[in-house]
Length: 591
Image 1: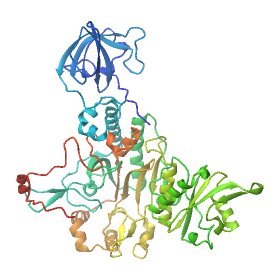
Image 2: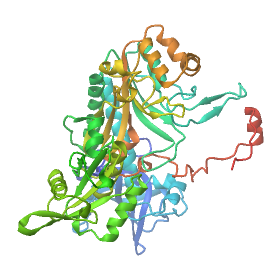
Image 3: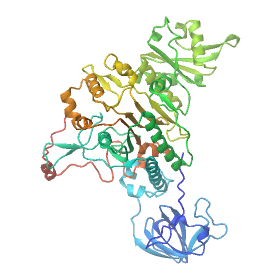
Image 4: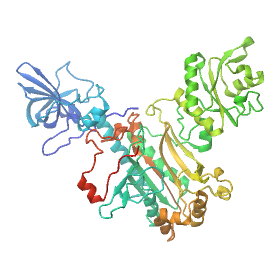
């Protein structure tokens, strides 16, 4: 969905202008006005008349100048004149200002401009590197102006929602100590403490927990976060999030707080207020969609066939888990297309992919056509069709393997076959709850924290923390929109005995815990309340609202996918003097 860039009519009066270009309407006819902006287009009718389309962030107004005027595209000018109706038959229905013009204009050149590197409109596709190199010109385009203002409206609505719910905005440091959140951090060498570094925060996680110990009770912040991770469509080195933490709350309270802010933001951005956000457990999401961030805008859910093929003589289906998806009308797929799907499944880790075309058999009985059909009994073939609910003309795709791998492969194929751009409506929000406490094991055989080591397990699972850690559920939760993870959070551990048990399961010694988290654990000894929190990724949320599939389109000054800024040419080497001040010496790059 693309959000309208129609400006809110306002005069925008300053000492240099009386009105904004895009705010002039029929009600202003007869008023003498002064507008300022950039020349979008100049047209001359002989020696006696010139037309200037003048643009500012609110839109374009046509200005009629007696005689000629020596201006070119992107000159910065002030125009004074009388607002009047356009002559009959010359109105422009595509412009909000298209009913009126400014006549009898005088033009003052405020600044000349070189020809822009590309047209400042939304009709021409421009190479992204050129756009980013001249971002200060690119941001003049109507779409980019609308995106930035949409972002501001979303931020404002979410701040208002948090204020309304009793939260207080507190800023946390950008120079911080290394944190246990898993991603690579950007290091900042200290000039005053040679050999030591700050890091730029991956998130305000530990700082906001300290604020809970400090009695702030309900904290929020539109926080800048930095992670040295590979960039992609939904990830930049720098990103912004609505960061939330509250004391004496449960998971239900946090979900309600955040839902209120997100629903307010959706209404501010789109004009429509979503209903209550549905909820699904992590186990259900994996079972039905093969991912913990399911796109629920379309069906094609994973179907469990393990019982159908229990005791099968077909070795490829003799696996702990057998699942399928059904592509409606997919039986017409060519053999090359089916081979490509098989190659894709193998690339995702599957041993293979079995496909079945569903057709009407003799007597109207539905049958299947597949290279592996001959290895299946009549009962298994009938069970396959019945369990999947497939109809004639459909295509059934089957993967058999370990549970997590089977779900992962079919979940990815589901998105390949039925997915759509994340920004395409409708907007379908989903809370995913009850994530596993641990995800896999490290080289020493210790469980790995799925979220972070300060996440509270479910109370009813605590007795299995040491004996069966893989079965323990955490009080962690994610918010998903159209298949993108918007954010995550959890109820935090505030009890020393539970924290000690979690560290022990993770293989973290008392000495290591004190070294890595000593300042937080020390604070907890002085009275830590029960607390929980969340963080919403604002770049992703705004991109979806703006109809964009890449968050770079809603960030003023983003980096390319390689982490390069074409405008400033960052990153750049430091001078020898700067390196000397920091006590740094560059070593040859390791091969």
